[in-house]
Length: 59
Image 1 (cartoon, one colour):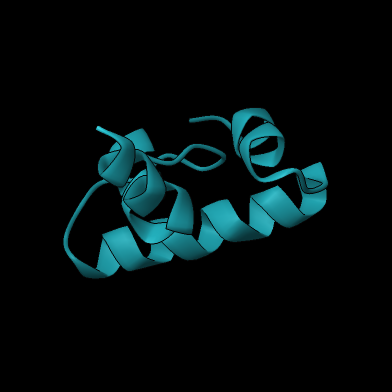
Image 2: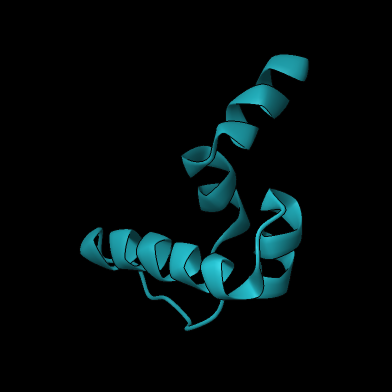
């Protein structure tokens, strides 16, 4: 997901979304994953936000 998509999904500004992406990418790096600045894995984003749990319950 790009920063724009994160901002839209969470309803926050792009600058705040970038901070979220940086935080999530730092967590992924600690786990040994390769990350790309300004993007975050969609599955990981959904797992780490409350939205992932809500969508799983709906399925």
